[in-house]
Amino acid sequence: MGKTVAALTFVFVIMGAALPFAANLVSGADVAENTWTTKAPMNVARSDLGVAAVNGKIYAIGGNAEAGYMPNSEGNDYKALGWIKDTNEEYDPATDTWKIKTPMPTPRCNFAIATLANKIYCIGGITNWASGLISYTAINEVYDPATNTWENKAPMPTPASAQAAAVNGEST
Image 1: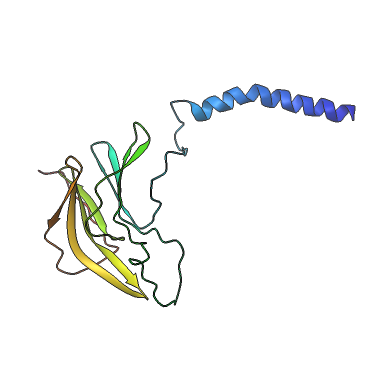
Image 2: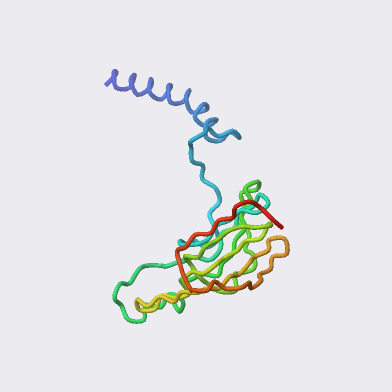
């Protein structure tokens, strides 16, 4: 019993001496490269959303907040169940905070997203998924973070989802 107490005392002394160093590793301002750090969560958890950055802020737009998949069930209407979202959130990395911004006019998920001239383009996507029938859209809506407003632009020629968008260079 004496050896066990001595061994445990030694372990606690070593752990106690190491704790301040370990705390400095994870709580210090300069986090080591190739590590993950937990930040503030979004207000509305969701998948299949669009993410873009403008002027040092990150925008999480639209998406699917599905609470559980119901395969082959009648009335599996994502829009009616509120799973397809119009949510628009702005993340400020400097303050580690999220703010709800003006919602996107057309709730959807799986859309293309790109930034150009400090505006965020949300193109196409899925607006509903009712009983296995997916409703695609060709809509092209643009969000201006400076004014917190949305504007409709010319739609794509053909509705689509899960496509990608990219901008080669920045123009005004």
